Length: 620
View 1 (cartoon, rainbow, N blue to C red):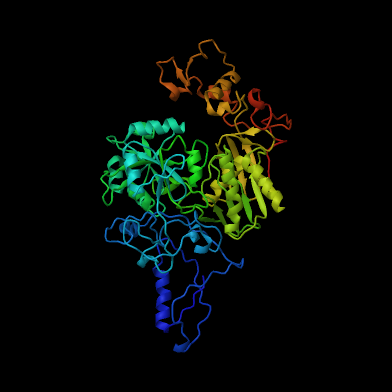
View 2 (view 1 turned 60 degrees about the horizontal axis):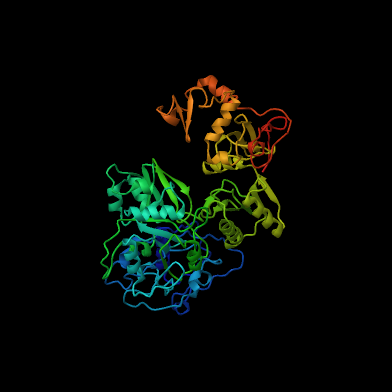
């Protein structure tokens, strides 16, 4: 940004000082340089304050701000009867609201966002005031937009009601599920205390056990039902406002057996937009009581990304949602809620999305090329590396459906352009059949740039080292399976990693993978394979000293103490029999590796867990 300041020296110097001291809450001033100071005559001074159009000349240093939760000032105006912004569900200002999800091109100005289609308007009074921002927080800098919610039935049939928000609240009170178009996509909302609604939603989503998140209408009701530390309270109320995993109180009235079966904790967040706050709290003539907690879960089917467009939601959420609370403000890129846990004084992000992405991560040294890293197949995220920073996209998710793959391709194609970059190298997982790797090779072919293959466990080690600023480490990587450099499936790796490459020091002994990927979903199959490899024989009633009862192995029969005693018969020698050695050193140079998808090609013994004449050192 370049500013030209006209005025008395004392006033100009005072402005510069205040600029450094009184930044908006999320603004970061990385550098301030005075290019020149020239004396001018009063008649030559600018007569008014002006903001000129941004120049898109390719020489910009670009960053995209993350979407932020509604700020306290805007929230007060939404619920203040005398405010011209009373009950307006899209109230935002320079300190809050959509950023990443509405951007179309850079530099970041209104005419290059999804807001460009909304006409300028003047504030009006009434139940749907028209505005984007308040006077004290940038009203003159940002245009106002005209938008309002509307209520639809599952097939997209508009429900003619005077107040769509009030009708949506009535539907939730009646035990219905309402799909709500939020900041970065649709969420499914229901009364968190209504057991019938929760049971019906689990059945409709085919989600019997995975926990649901809830939204508390304020901190007071959250602290009534959950145990909240000062750090967790601060994180809940922050502008990032992630879902925070909290311990539930012993006397909680929430149906935790349906919200988070068997966990003892619960994902909780505060309202992130005025729309969500207005759903939870009655206003005007609304007689529906406040909802202390609303279930808020992703608006999708299992394995799919969240819906962003109205028509998309009507099609994909049919049979799940009873009503749809929609609006006409566009969402260019989906952005799910972030998920975090407070560990001591540290915040650990379990899902990095709204509020955090696409914030950049500084690197220790500059990159030689602009790199687009495609991520893996589960919990996918795209990363763009250039200069001395790495920029992570929001969480994309598991690449198990055509919709998820479409979402990945959309982000991979758009993301570099937002930062004025063209990838000069594309990094993919070593496994050739991984969907992200296939797309990466496709994009590399279109751009005519090289592809770098990265071994799966090596990538995990590097990410942890980058986070903790380590140049060298001994890494123990337990992340399921990944294709190894010898053509076999690896898992449970002991690696030595430094700036020159990596070395595989050890792993577990090989074993049959009964049923291929089925053994990942049913770990008892892996245990059976280990029993056979250890020389134990099946007696008809189980292995010696063990009884297999459904999916639970128990010592001493069904009355035993269960899976906590899985290690009981082995001791040190038993582990040695079961795993060969506590750490298995790959040896030899006989590569007789099985298929790439599972050791032994889905059920046969895997003889190929060996290295080529010793440890590998691969430069990436």
